[in-house]
Length: 271
Image (cartoon, rainbow, N blue to C red; front, side, top):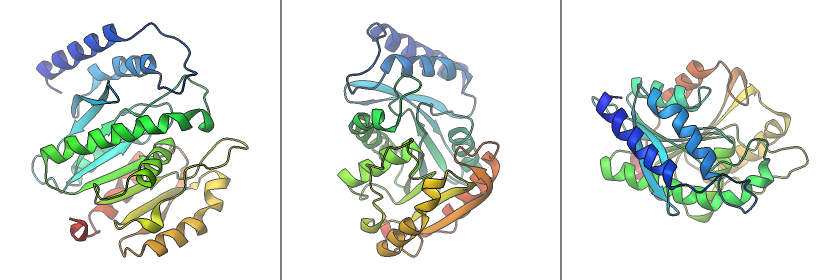
């Protein structure tokens, strides 16, 4: 990020912080915008690969990090992080948003709605409607900058939010879907966001770690059956060896697998 970009981003962040109400515990089904502001403040000045941008949804601004491949640009991967994190989270979001550029793709990693630390899957369910607006806003932004394929890539709670968006909208605005760590919830909390694979026209990559939590592993046959029902020949289910749900210390192999699928899958049929 250039010095001028850092100055502009910091100014936008300062204006946003001043506009926020005083911090309060969130129990009203809305995102914790104050926490999102703190997360942005922590990372925005340290972004060296990519440009921070501010997008709008639900009458609020949210942070995105747009990282361009200016030479090839096969398309743009829209990255949704896991629960309570940020768009430069070092375990999944950062490796993908920077590493995929080397594989010929641009990326846009966005801030998803968050709550206070310690909140569980059921606490996050009311936030999914806010996530829909952010996904729509990010896709519109990408479409305004490029006519290349748009691939949605979502991890963990970001995957729940992506599934909710797909179930309530459809996949007509994207050309592919990468879902990572799918189906993970908290103890005694049942999955409320069904997998949309059977009704999707675009290719889907269902990627999980070998050391994933037991419940998502138990769902693998169900998810494979849904992929088969969708009928896209580009859809695959892949296991990453020695990786856990969070892909700790697995950023490089994760990026390699995702890039391999992106660069061997035909997205033209969806255009």
